[in-house]
Image (cartoon, rainbow, N blue to C red; front, side, top):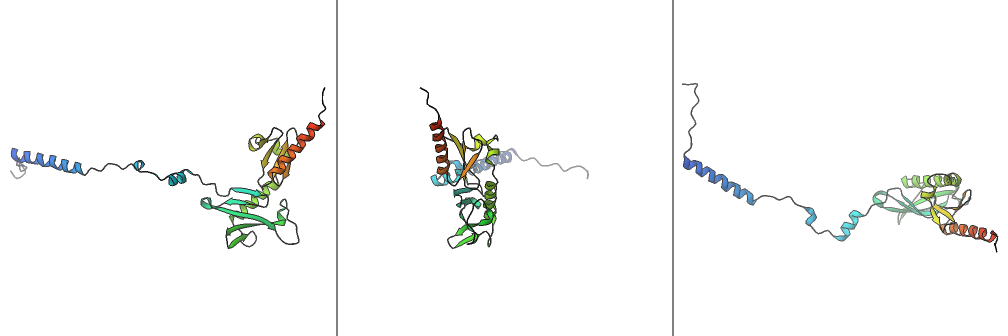
Length: 207
């Protein structure tokens, strides 16, 4: 008799009914505290906040040239830094095609401008690389490349123009052999117009 399990007493029907009622009551109470997943899309979104989330920040290192001696470079988190080129010393003339004659100055704040020689940083390196790329640019080779039509802009059907990596503007006459650099866009377009007018004046009139 010692190895036999002790029989578990069965609850009476009244107790079973009471336990069932308690379980149902507990389920009803818990249902009152049921948490529905929160959908943030139902909240109103401020217009300015929405535009800021959609707006894309320019890639760091992007350069916008205002002229071949001045421009703006994009820093971290889209911060813009103005910069300009100046003569390295009073004994040389500023020549943008000769890196030895110019020094890059990056405006950090109203009270501090970082010079390329005394306070070099990543901005100086990127601007210098752009200047070097522009200096070694070969307009004749570029014209014969597949990128010529996609990376240049048509100008009135008489030629194509493109801003170089160093801020200069290049112009190619339709049917020409190579391109020519100019300090500003309007000078490049004026060149194309003069060449087109010259060709038109040389065309013989047929009666």
